[in-house]
Length: 356
Ligand SMILES: CCCCC/C=C/CC(=O)SCCNC(=O)CCNC(=O)[C@H](O)C(C)(C)COP(=O)(O)OP(=O)(O)OC[C@H]1O[C@@H](n2cnc3c(N)ncnc32)[C@H](O)[C@@H]1OP(=O)(O)O
Image 1 (cartoon, rainbow, N blue to C red):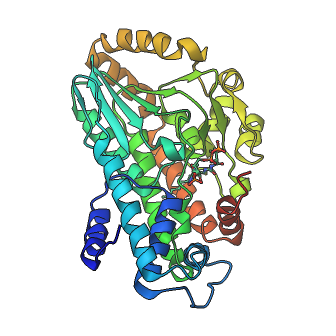
Image 2 (cartoon, helix red, strand yellow):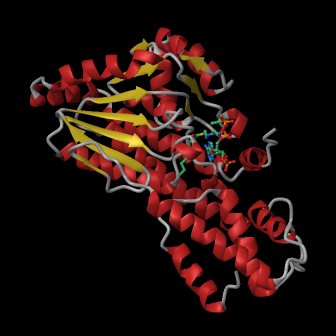
């Protein structure tokens, strides 16, 4: 089928209207086809090793070889229309009383419980900048709504794989310092939302948890985990340092040496180990996890809301100032870490890992 230049322009406009992120591979393919269709075969200089975002883009364009401009235009249009039809055919089934006003979350409010579900299952619920901001927004909403307890959980096989490492990837070498400063402001604000949250906050850890998804657990009031959940804080592997107040809460919860095994030496805990160390409140068999946990949550949600909120605030008020200080210090350290070769090389290695 022959496509006109007008069809090509139309596809370009349709792409801008897509809501879902199609993933890195598809985006690179679209980039390459667009360049081939508009400029022909790639004959620009290959970017350097460290400039790995532009290098990945160059590789994708080069891989099209001598594909004609018409051929590239046709493939581009076909790819865009497949993405558009995939998205429009998806009917959002949301439970009665739910509201899905977020791009990266599914927030439902029912039976006095507001559930904030991390909803980027294709990337193991990795937290990108959009999700950081939407979680803060959802917490602000939940603090004011008529819920008695608030739940954070994950969609899919993972609870959350921590910070989206693309947050550090799409930064040009000249903008690293500015990116680190912005990241530190965002992270501090994000963690403060958990320190200051006024209602009982319960983590329903449905699967493996990594990085910041684990460290902020020290700021939750209850942590229920499926027995298939694991808890991993690979910070030194990533050239980074602890966040989420874990440099203070973890030693308090589990003792300095157990906290050190996790935060310095990358030890991954099973759900049972995390429970034994006090990070997790209870572990449930995966096949009855949701049923057992939600039976408890519904009981909690029928208790007097003000008594629960005031009791929670009493418990947390003793440490709030300290937690804000710790959060500020951790973010200052990370600002320096994110500009280090140790961190940048670790992120490069992640995106260049073999996926055999
Ligand atoms: C504003 C800045 C604030 C910063 C706050 C600091 C926080 C500290 C941290 O959170 S550090 C921890 C960061 N997270 C990680 O290092 C985990 C990285 N991911 C993995 O190691 C693995 O993906 C896994 C172990 C979580 C899962 O492995 P598995 O083999 O089961 O699955 P895949 O690797 O194929 O993953 C499926 C796709 O999802 C993408 N993805 C997964 N996790 C992340 C992530 N954290 N960031 C970005 N992308 C992630 C993965 O790349 C695959 O995508 P693809 O299909 O397009 O290749």
